[in-house]
Image (cartoon, rainbow, N blue to C red; front, side, top):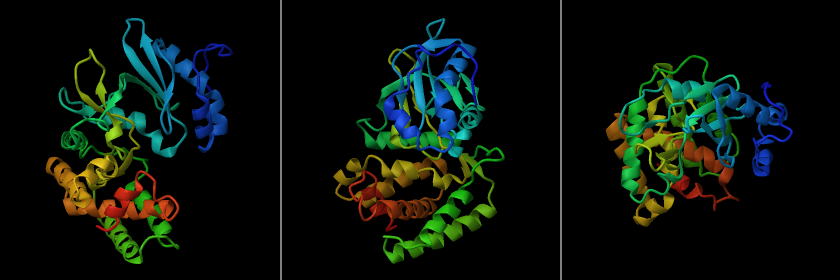
Length: 313
């Protein structure tokens, strides 16, 4: 989709080469990527903001710091045409907006058709990934998940059943994971799909790990904010999995990482009301699925070790 706006031959909407290279592998990038600067400029002009710092990017999206005429600072985020990201503006606008405590970031503006959102600017250098107290960081995520639990999923979204079908197809082939773990995972996939058939599906964040919770900027009212959802429709027991794979060093440092990860599950479930055994079953399925691509040649991947623990649950 093409935005209409100012000539960008000498425009400020830079796109780092590293992002261009990474985004080139995304489906539809040959149409989306060449228009990205123009799309950003169009949305910025429409919303009355101008660039206010160097461009940034994550694994999937581009982010430009911007400010409005009153000096208020925002982040203009543009996502590629990836189906998981299509529902991000809808999800961020749909979740509850508590006045206090940890909460999901709320867009100031959104253009779902172009997959662009204007977000309050947070502190990119302060996430729960580096928070000094791991237990407190887990509690923040537990509170965030409890705050969005049970939000009805809008129609037309990717569902957890879609994800489970993909997992089951992968596990049906030749995989480098112990056979007993694969059998257990496939049995649990079948159980989960049966459970989903009789459940009202909720709107899930689907990627709420420690790095996706940022602190407010210095000088702003303090608080923690969840960002960057990969929304799907599913059940709450699926939500804690990303948090379990991160901050592995903290779990390992306890001397009993299995117990440490189980403790994270228990902390979240005490806030959300989800069943801890069901959460562990979901985590085991995801761990086995991801180990299929990490073993045997990528055992040094930062997520391999936590997945090896969870695969045995």
